[in-house]
Length: 538
Image 1 (cartoon, one colour):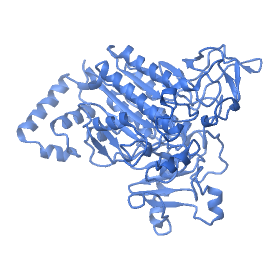
Image 2: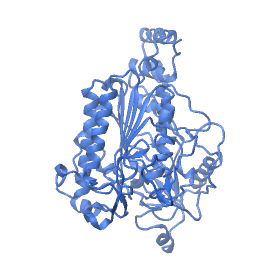
Image 3: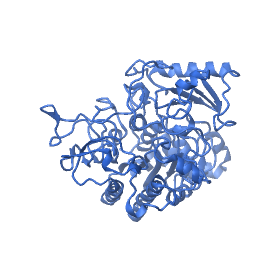
Image 4: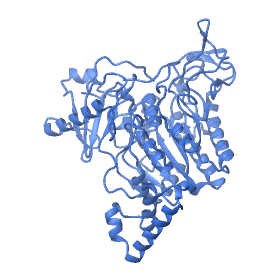
């Protein structure tokens, strides 16, 4: 028995009849009587069994860059000095989101939010990131995007960086790399297949496939053995002969091969390509070294763009473009310690017009590039200024695939499918919550952004402690339309806005969710202004 038409299918039908309308009411009003009659007939036919997504659910590819600022991609910031031709071309073929945000301004919590549709500040990781050999952050039994899509007959794979923890085997008090590693991407993550490096700047320095290291990392690396430009600081176990500049090309080749292997299959696939670039170690391949004429991290950004281009080219080569949704984005903003001074001296601004960088509560920490292409569904060359969050991918993919998210999953995920199809009449989100590397929170609604800390909440000056010594207010309120650089704190002028947003954030905390549904429990006690935060630095 074929499925009845869903809201998704009806949205597709509306977009096909008239691509421009932003509301259902205006769409229907704008359609001529014959066209509307045809629409009704089409709906009836669909209900009879000709269901678009049921017949051909799309492949989904998410390319996640690591520490790529919104100003690092030229189609988002035309004054950028680093060439990104492949991403610029992708934007002309799809939709560019100008108000996309990561759930956190640092790696592990951002990745947790992507896979679970839940803000990571609800977990034990209240600040920082997971440290080398940390245990899994994803709770046992928690639904993830790949697990959800597998229920819809998708084949799923993660290729690249993980950084969400494992339960590493230990024998006689020492880590045993000859045994399977439990509770990683294929267990807690829910993927069918995994290949990558756990974290490229953490031991063990080797590739991992599914739950085993490829080879035994029997050597020991010390940071003195690598060039200072790598910005590598963690010693530890390493595979003999390990080469950092071969990580990204290997991931590139693996992703292209995965597409080649699955393009002709009847089952749709979900590929999450979590790049290790331009995160440290800053190790562009030999052919990319010096290409930017700026510094190694700029070279690495160019290589990141090229890898995205290779994946897109593979989608086209194997004839699956029309039925493949490709999303390119980043886990957080640009890192300030891997060559920022040289970039600024050259006139390149990695955060574009925004203040701050990775780890900060300010825009530069979490305002990220986001491009989506789906030929025939997403209108080419369009932009969307609706605020979205990476946690929204779960609800979006659920609506596309026909999956149902249970009440205890995806608590902070909202479908952006109406934005993608051009049918949204209002913002899809009520509000957005941000988290800094130090664990400070912020909430934005409409043009207002309220930050619950006196400083950056991260690495940029002033940090919170110096900000307090300067007598700066404990909260910051910015009008993000008039003050994109967050220079004028107007919290004293708008106490009613401060009160309203504070109450809304408290509700999100108390409810254990920011979306409609049954109340849920946070994993830990969550306070708007946290006390002793625990976590690692990246």
